[in-house]
Length: 186
Image (cartoon, rainbow, N blue to C red; front, top):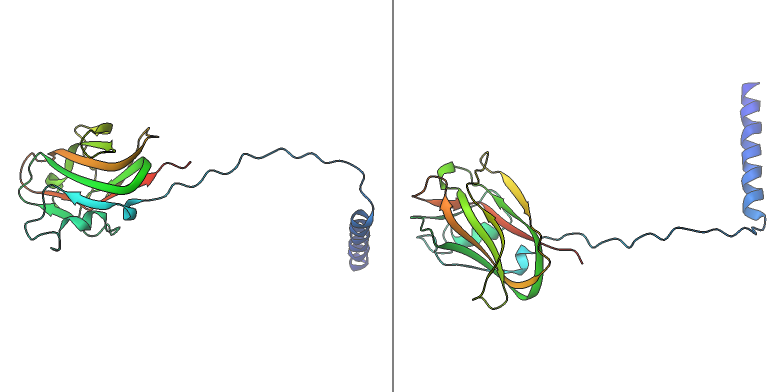
C-alpha cells in the first residue's frame, strides 16, 4: 500500500511539473542586478625581473643565489654573508602595475638571519621611491613561515623594492626563503 501512495505522489509531482512548464507564463519576473565579479588577485612575481644590490658570494647561480628568493619554492632561499644594512631586492615590470600585498617567508634555519626591519617601496623611474609599507622589529614566529602583508596601494609602479635595513641578530648572515607580490584587482 505504501508503494502505491509514493507512486501516486510521484505521478502528481510529475503532472504538476509538466503543467507548469507547458503552460504559458504571463507574469513578469524582476531580477536584482548582481555586481560584476572582481578580478581575483594574482601573484605577479614571475612577471618581474629581479635585481639585488648584494649577491650571494657564489654568485646568482649559486645554490643560495638571489633568484631563489622569487622561484616560488619555499624550500629554497637567498643567503648573503655578510649582511650589510643597505641590502635591497627589486622587481621591475615592463609596464606599471599596482601591488596590493606581498608575502615574505622565513627560511629553514637560524632565525637570527631573518629580516627584522624593512621598507617596501614603488617607483616609476627607479630613482624616486614612494614608501608603501614599513616594518620595524618584525619577528617571524617560526621557520618556513609565510606571512602576507596587505598594503593600501592603488598606484601602478614599474619598480618595487624591498629594502632590508636590519636583521634579527643585527649582524652576520641574511636569509629569506621567498618574496612574492600580488596585484590589486581592477
